Amino acid sequence: MNIKRYISLMALFCLILAPLKAQSYGHIEIISVEKNTEILKKLQKLELEFLMEWKGRIYIILRKELIDLSKLEIEGISYRLETGNFYPYKSREMISIQSGLNGDYHSYSEVETDLLAIEESSPHIAKLYDIGDSLEGRNIYALKISDNVLMDENEAEVLFIGCHHAREWISVEVPLLLAEYIVENYETNPEIKRLVDQSQIWIIPLLNPDGLEYSIHFYRYWRKNRRNNGDGSYGVDINRNYDYKWGFDNEGSSPETFSVVYRGESPFSEPETQAIRDLFGQRHFQALISYHSYSQIILYPWGYISQPSEKDSLLSDIAVNMSNLIQSVNGTLYNFGQAGSSLYLTNGDTTDWAFGVYDIPSYTIELPPIDILLGGFFNAEEEIQAIFRENLPAALFLIDWAIQDYDPQMNSIEENRKIFREKLLRPKRFRKSALK
Ligand code: 0X9
Ligand code: ZN
Image (tube, rainbow, N blue to C red; front, side, top):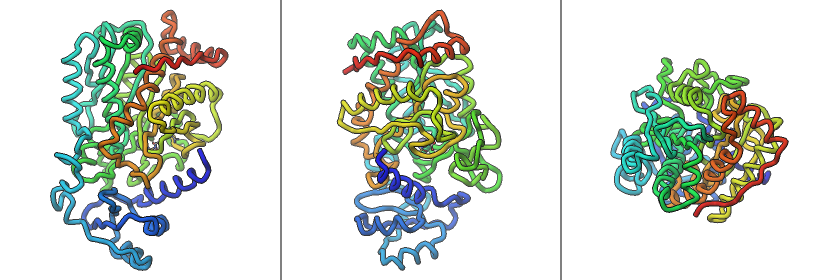
């Protein structure tokens, strides 16, 4: 990653994560300011909580309104009070681009409806599983796609996960569209048929349904799940709750309940991570992608330290191929690199756990945009299709990669570890037979 870009990303990231404060909505105010270069420059200096951009204005949450307002006044930034336009004060229709509060983005029940429709339309290749319940009782769905889908075949398995983080709405859309695409093209596209026939593809588009609903209906900027921490704060960062180097340090995650990167009381304390853990216990995955946003970057372990793993060259080879394939679609460049050194440190995240415990290549794809000035977590609805389309060949590539390397004689965890070790010595022939 270009160093200037990195520094500005980090600065903006600090700006976003600045308010590590108990979630309390009693006295917040929401204001908006005009979006222009001069104001953006000034805003970067102030530790304010960015909510969203809409129609050329930046919306900001003020938790300590007098202090925060005086900061704006000192900088000579004029603002408009918007609190009254937001739920629960008033309907949030104003920020919805189309009907409903989430426009073209999926809510929990819309995801559920679409997954059921996929299964109903193609029961021979798609089977929907409920792999756990969220804290508020919503289902965590996993769609399996394969020929002989009801059978547990001795084939490569690949997992795609969306929405660990509630506000990253685009991360629901990409895996959901992937599921639809694969099923819809099975009969007509021989390359898709080959992949489906030779593998077992698992797609969990919405791992954090409670968080997503909260983000849609109350607080767009919500990240964690909705665990009541019992001290007035809510939420565990699901992507800090996996049992590999959990709580390794307080930089990559936080022991503080109010933090946006709170790691939870213990590893796998949350139903969402338990669902993933249990699914891994029953399957034999060879690779995984966990979609997040934003930053436009493909990340791989380790995340908990900045030193590379011994399999760095293999992990990076696959990432290079995925990045090239992505770029070949719309020309969008996704950087790639080791998570802990390319972005920032995390501990207890999905990919470190899958790689550390199961020895499989595991990727976090941070979807577009590349930075907050291009929208941050708030991708326009019109961008959904293009973002999915550019990610499609990379996802298919990883499935193909898993198929090519799968040895049906050796599919226990131990044996898969061996296979993965051997891959290090045997660089892959990367096939770019991307599917149209
Ligand atoms: O912090 C995270 O969990 C991921 N980024 S996000 O902005 N979507 O929250 C990054 C996880 C990848 N791991 C590391 N960067 N170490
Ligand atoms: Zn995320």
